[in-house]
Length: 169
Image 1 (cartoon, rainbow, N blue to C red):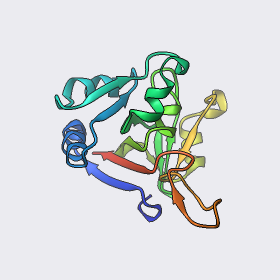
Image 2 (image 1 turned 180 degrees about the vertical axis):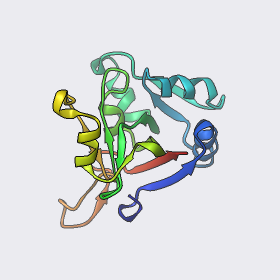
Image 3 (image 1 turned 30 degrees about the vertical axis):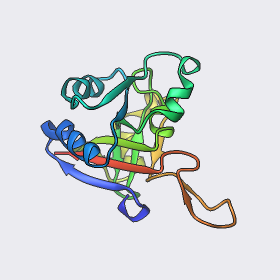
Image 4 (image 1 turned 135 degrees about the vertical axis):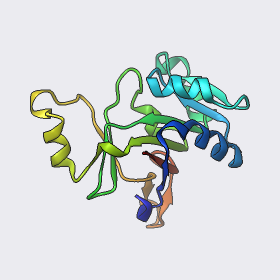
């Protein structure tokens, strides 16, 4: 993940909200997108008073402008991580819709250290996807990048310009 410009930090499981409070404040980022998951509730309770929280709790057509122009970062959970490729696996649902990890300029993903798998095949086997695959799984291996324009590498064109993974220990 770090080799492709993703940031990775190890954080004690009970201190990830404090880490985000301190780090995002120091970066001057205060407009956060949260969903309706347990992670969102934890962040909403512990977020610094200076944060402006937007909850992804309605149809996108009702607040598209806010999502695309008035959010600094989103906080989501992950299904797991893949050691072999340095990728995160997300299983978006109504509590953490897919756009949370695809639209904001910065995506912060929480990865439980005990949910790190050797590779994708191991995750599929341990999660028993043969008996019930997700309708949509995302594999994220760092910030969005492309070299479509004049073969010049650019970040953030088709997704987040930056990504942070917090490994919760």
